[in-house]
Image (cartoon, rainbow, N blue to C red):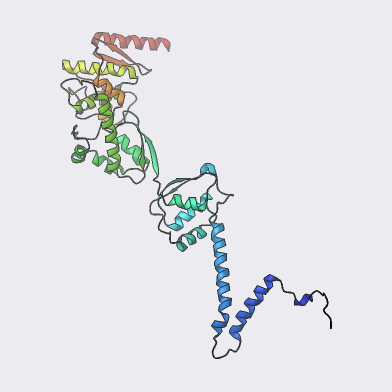
Length: 379
């Protein structure tokens, strides 16, 4: 019979996908057929098991790949920072990443880490990501361990107790431990050897600092003291400090100037007044020292407040107080190192924060009365 150009019968055609399914079915069915003694069911089914395993692995790979991609429905590039705390497990890190939309599925993330042996390579830190990034970049960043940085601004004149509370509220220090170190003379002298202070008051230079989360109280205080010593070296360079005063006494006087002055231009004048009173053996009569003795910042002192029995009350005790009464800034340190030459002995504050200066007590009282009369006339 001759050959004819005919199409194969439809029943004889097998789609490529069906061929693979038929192969699996035939391989698995061999497990239940009688076999020759020299061949086991496992050997007959081995191709099917291999294919099943391969399918499973490919499926897992696809699942993991999809799971570690950015979740566009959740991810917000404007809020793309993430803080990973110390001691976080890979499961906790995966949850944080999924919550931020940095990945789609935390389980895929965990599976990937364990399959690649990287489950112990991620580090705590503060991370920020842009609008577009790959999973490889994400993983590389999480391995760097970028520290969580806290930015803290310490205002001029803050006491060490106020600074301790500020840092404690930021979660940076244990307040009790912080204050303990500020009274530890061995620690203080190791940091401020040329000053040998009895407390850290006056040496926590007011400035803006960046501290890494997890830094110890000792490390944080060392940053404060290092900054103070740096500024002190700058302000004392090419300056001859007033004779008869130790470095600690100069810092103490600067802290009083800081507590009294509100206008920078008046600081040297106020410093000059205090020097004049010390030379004459007069009481300093600083309200700022009384505030420190009271342990609170009162908007207005009463006469009974001036009677508090404390070595810090310069209305009762002559000379400088035992320690600084706060932490002075650069301008106050410069003021006591280069005070204005003046014959003023008295001053009082006006409502706008500036001061009226007088040479005699009578002139001082007259100026106060005039200001009171002016205020009464305006009311």
